[in-house]
Amino acid sequence: MRVSPVAMSAMPTIATHTADARVASPPGWYLGAVTLPLMGYALGRLAFVLAGNRPIALLGPIEPISLLLFVLVIGEEIGWGGFLLAGLLRRRSPIVATTIVAAAWAVWHRPLYFVPGMPSYGEPFLAFAV
Image (tube, rainbow, N blue to C red; front, side, top):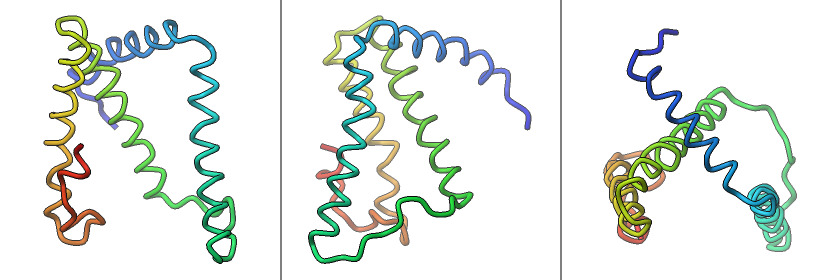
């Protein structure tokens, strides 16, 4: 697989911003970043069973599309938070930078609400964007 020169030139910037965020965070934030999603997942599974459903297997076969989506989501998050937001924060206040990223994010995801067959097709976009 070939990587474009533009993508290669962005990699050091993304790595730098990611490293900067990691160094600036107290250790407790890492603990929360790992445990809170796991706790949310566990509570969701518990609520699922308490609602009268049969427990589902914790791990099953990983399908290629799931792996692809995982990689794309991680890449998207690095792009929004590690690249765009970090760049905007150098020139703008946190509120303004976050508002710009939120607007770009909403515009990026808006088409998913018009594509038949997508889970969000026909749903109210404003509720999702806010």
